[in-house]
Length: 168
Image (cartoon, helix red, strand yellow):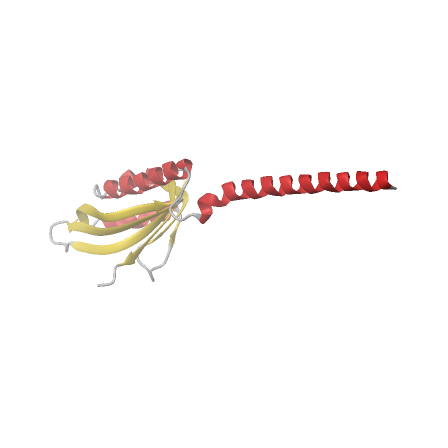
């Protein structure tokens, strides 16, 4: 009987050690895997690289708009691209529909200037605050818009772009 109790205690001790070791490993793995999500301002090197590329893509596209040539911005847009000129306006769905819209819009202007006051990327989302200035063709009226916008970037293309007026 004494021998049985000793073996039973040894088995319980081994089981307890296995449990504690397994729990410790699991907690450590969970802590390491979740630390970047739980700690504000911490992103992996891969995430930072992607965000930098996404922000550069959007800023490059803004520079191309200055040509007022839809063909110059088409390569930045995904086929299923969606655009909203300003909050409350209809959403333009599809790259082809957007190219037609922007072609008509650009027809009244000889040039544009997108002044980006600030921008930031968080994952696939790129936010900008801009003043978009459009110089009209002779006889037309110049236009200027102070907006904040967001673009959703996936796989190196802009899938969604929406602008919102900045409160004055």
